[in-house]
Amino acid sequence: MAIPARAIELPDGARGGATVLELLRTRRSMPRVQPACPPREVIEQVLEAAVWAPNHHLTEPWRFIVLTGEARRELGEAMARGKLAREGTVDPPKLDALRRKPLRAPVIVAVGVIPASREPEVEIEEICAGAAAIQNLLLAAHGLGLAAMWRTGEAAFDPEVKAFLGLPPAAHLLGFVYLGYPAGEPPRRTRRPAAEVTTWLGWA
Ligand SMILES: Cc1cc2nc3c(=O)[nH]c(=O)nc-3n(C[C@H](O)[C@H](O)[C@H](O)COP(=O)(O)O)c2cc1C
Image (cartoon, rainbow, N blue to C red; front, side):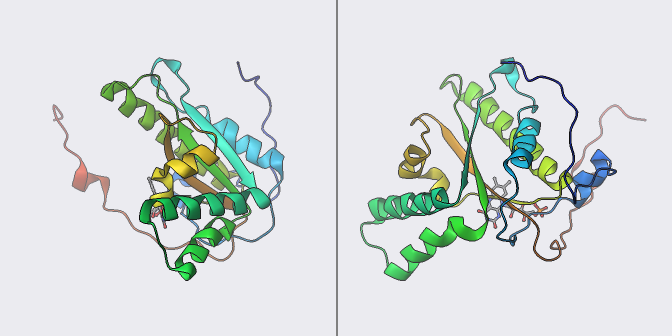
């Protein structure tokens, strides 16, 4: 279904004047967020940005499961069930810590990809498209004044967790984007200059 064009409404705290390049440079993974839940409309804007990611043959392979409130506890339970199923026995404190993980942010967007086929080339491209959608999501969240963090861990590869999220066995769970309002300053991070990892061919 086509997405109708409409003006983007910016909430308070949004970085309305920032250019794309500024947003790219200043986005950081933010591990700590405030408990207050952002309005659903803001999360919807973030998701609408996500779906404009490039995707080969327009397969739009991404699926978003948006959890808040008690649904995060249920996700924690699914993570604990999955770990128990994998490992048989787990120290109760470790299991409790796992159960609490989804409570670190008021909103979690689980991102799945359902590949158009199981051919390896197609599957890789579909995962690439899903990752591009997550980057869109992270940048849109940043632009709208939200803090975000892409997390994976064992749970992202757990069939129990996938089933809880309603994803079919053939789906890939690319991770969980934790979202909320920022708490504290963004961590300082560096990158190697692009020149160190770039080869120029055919240039004078
Ligand atoms: C596929 C993927 C999975 C990630 N999973 C985790 C994770 O499980 N836990 C975590 O702390 N950060 C995770 N991150 C975030 C990275 O740690 C973070 O992007 C990196 O430290 C660079 O920081 P920046 O995003 O602020 O530039 C993940 C990032 C990607 C791309």
